[in-house]
Amino acid sequence: MKPSESAKAFEAHAAASGVVVHACVPRQGFAQMVSFYQSIAVDGCDQPDGDMLLFQWGTNDWGSGTHFELNITRQFIEHELQDDDAISQLSLTFRFEPTAERGVLGQGNRWCGRPAELQEFLEFTLSSPAFAAVADQRAMEVGLDHWYV
Image (cartoon, rainbow, N blue to C red; front, side):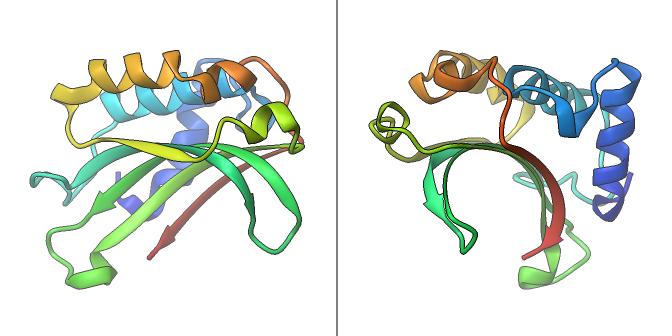
């Protein structure tokens, strides 16, 4: 798979497990992204830090109103390209109403730089207060996007 094909490939991967990406809860979406990371190789990103996962959360306003967001992103760095043209991201974002309870969760992130770090990444992610707060709740919006930075 090429990074530019990752959104379609991810949706197909999830569908094969019976998960509809735009209708899933965070626990399902995160499990699918981790499975996708483990089982679907990406062409041209085999150097160190060429294929990573990022977990991030927080309350943000990106111009369409304030939302609490829980996100898992697979970042690709294509070794044949240069500078920012080499970096792209497949991002799965769950947007929820901002509440006082969600606001106290703050903002943060955690990287998984390579498969050997995946277990520690999963333990952090699944036990984080931000993930626990919304893991099994339906989001207002589920977004799946791929873009070059």
